[in-house]
Length: 65
Image 1 (cartoon, rainbow, N blue to C red):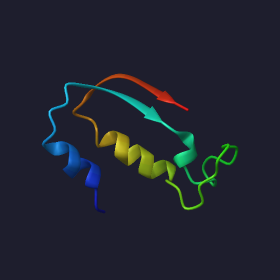
Image 2: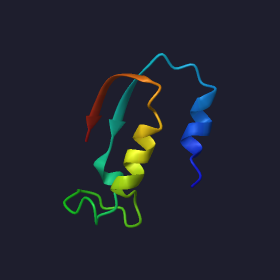
Image 3: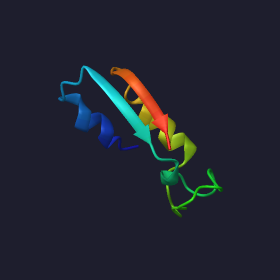
């Protein structure tokens, strides 16, 4: 599987990072009560892959909206 987020962040000097995740990005099959459904959106597994791809970054905070 292609993982562009790993390639994009490899050469970036990031000391700390705050992350905001908008639940509307998920496919309605995984988040049926979201206010703005996105058919064909991200799967739960894909979101976990992206977040796990950021494992070398020190997070200072994260929120889900």
